[in-house]
Amino acid sequence: MEKGNTRPSWDNPMQFVLACVSYAVGLGNVWRFPYLCQMHGGGGFLIPYLIMLVLEGLPLFCMELAIGQRMRLGSIGAWSAISPYLGGVGIASVVTSIYLCLYYNVINAWSFWYLFHSFQAVLPWAHCPANTNLTGHLEECEAATPTQYFFYRETLNISPTINDGGGMHMGQALCLLLAWMLVYICIVRGVASTGKVVYFTASFPYLVLFIYLIRGVTLHGAVNGLKYMFTPKLEQLANPTTWINAATQIFFSLGLGFGSLIAFASYNNHNNNFERQAIAVSLINSGTSIFASVVTFSIYGFKATFNYEACLGRLRLLLLNTFDLGEDAISVDNVTFWVTELNQTYPDRFATLSNKLEICSLETELDTAVEGTGLAFIVYSEAIKNMPVPQLWSVLYFSMLLMLGLGSMLGNVTAITTPLCDIRFLSRHLSNETLNGLVCLFCLLLGLGFTTRSGNYWLTMFNDYGATLSLLFICYTLHFVGLIHLDRFENDIEDMIGHRPNWYWKIVWAGVGPILIIGLFIFYIIIYIMGGTPTYQAWDKDLVTVDSAPQLSFSSHLLMHQQKAVIYNLYLLSATFSIPKVFIRIYSLEGGWVYQC
Image 1 (cartoon, rainbow, N blue to C red):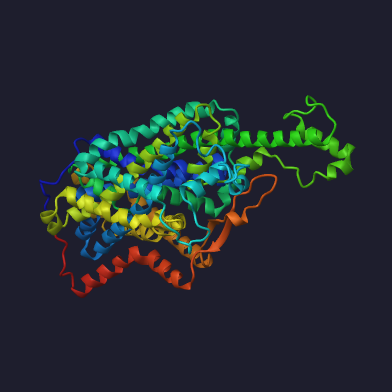
Image 2 (cartoon, one colour):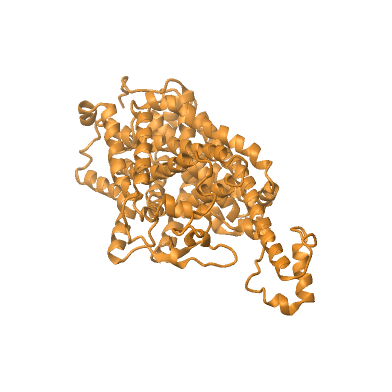
C-alpha cells in the first residue's frame, strides 16, 4: 500500500497517548463502573473485570491501533484496504459513531446547564421551589427530592411518556449549541487542534478526582461506602450476568469498534510503538475506573449516612412528639432501642404510629443502585449540596464531567471526519475546517431532537440499544481478520515495531477472543428476543407515591406502539446494514471495486 507523505501526524507520541486516554476515560468510568461494582459483589467484581481486560479489551485495543497505524486511513479506508469485502464494516463504524455523537453531546449540554446554575448563592437543587401561592413548596418536588425535581423538571422538563414529544427546551438547545461549538473549536484543524486540547482534557479530570478523593475520604460516613465497595461478595462470581457485564464494560469503556482508535492511530508515524501504548492506555483506563469508584463510594457513603441519620432524626422527633419523654432521653444513637422499648411498653399507643414509622437502614441506603444520569446528576448533586461551600464542589464536579465528555467527543467526531477526509472528492473540494464544521452542524441539528420534553427517553433508547449489536459484529470481524490473516498481521507488526507479537497476542487474537465475542453476541440476541417489547422508566408527577419517605416517581411504559416498534428495530439494525450490502456488491462485481485513497 502506498503511504502518503502529506498526511498530518501527531507532534509527538505523548499527544497520541493523551488523545487515547481522553477518549477512553469518559463518563462511563464515573457512573457505570461504580454501579457495576455495587451490583456485582463490590471488590469481587474486579476479578471478572480484570480477566476480561486481559482476554478481550487489551487485545482488541492493540489490534485497532495496529490497523490504523499500518493503513494510515480512517475506518472505511482501513477495512477496505484489508479486503474490499469488509468496506461495510468501516461504514458501520462511522454510522455507529454518528449515532453516539447525536446523544452523547446532549449529556455535555446538561453539564453546561448544571455548571451555569452552580454560580448562585444557593444551589437551585438544594431546596424545593415555592408554589404559586407562596404558601409552601411545589407538591411534585416535595413528593420526590429537590435534586430529582431539578433534573427531571427544571433541566429536562420531561414529559410523562415518550409519545408526548412536547416542545423544545430552549435552555437545553442553547447549551447543546455551546457544546457543539466547543467540540468544533477543538477539532477545527484536525489533529493539529486535537493534539493541543488533549493535554487539558486528559489531565484536568484527574486533578478534580484527586481533589474529590481528599475531600471524599474526610466526609462523615465515607468509610461506610468504602467498606461496602471493598467487601467482596464472591458468590456473585457464580452469576453469569456478572461476567457478561464485566466484558461489556471493558468493551465500551475502551471505545472499541467505533473507529476512533483506528482514526487516531492513522496519524502515527509508521514505526511508533503502539503495543506499549495500548498496554499503557488500557491500564490507565481501568485504573481510572477503580480510582473513580473509590471517590464515588466515599461520597456515596456520605450520602447514605446522611440520609440514614436524617431518617433516625425524623424517627426520634416522632417518638418525642408521641410519648412523654425528655428531649435528652432519645438520641440518634439509641433511637432504635427506644422503638423496641416503647413498642413493648405501650403497644396500643405505638400501633397508632404504624403508618408513620420509617424503616431506617444504612445497608438499604447503600444497596440502592443508581447508574447513568441518576448517579452523575442526582446522587452527586445530593451529596454536593450537603458539603461546605457547595458551589465550589459543584463547579469542580461539573467541569470534570464536561471535560470527560469533551474528550470522548473528540474521538467520536474524529471517527467520522477522518474517513471523510480520506475520500479524495471531499478533500479536494472542502477544507478540513469546512468539513469538520459540516459534520458538527449535521449532528447538532439532528441532536436537537434530544432537547425536547421526551428527548431523555430517546437518549436512553439510543444509549441502551443503538450501538451494541453493530459493535459486537465489528469486534468479531477484528478477531476474524486476526484469525485468518495472523501471519500477515504478524509481519506488519514486525515491520512497524521491530518484533513479532508474542504468544499472548496470538492466543487472544485468534483463540480466546473470538469465542468470547460469539458468546456475548449470542447472549445479547437471547436477551433481546426474550425481553419482549422494551420498556422504559418514565417520570410521571401524577404517580408520585407520597409516603413517609420520598419515593422516586417512575412508572414503567412500553417503549413503542406497533408502528414505532418497526422504526425502532430498523434503527437497531441500521448500522449493520452496510456490512452485508457492501459484501454483496463487491461479490457481484467479482472484486471490481477498490477503495481509492
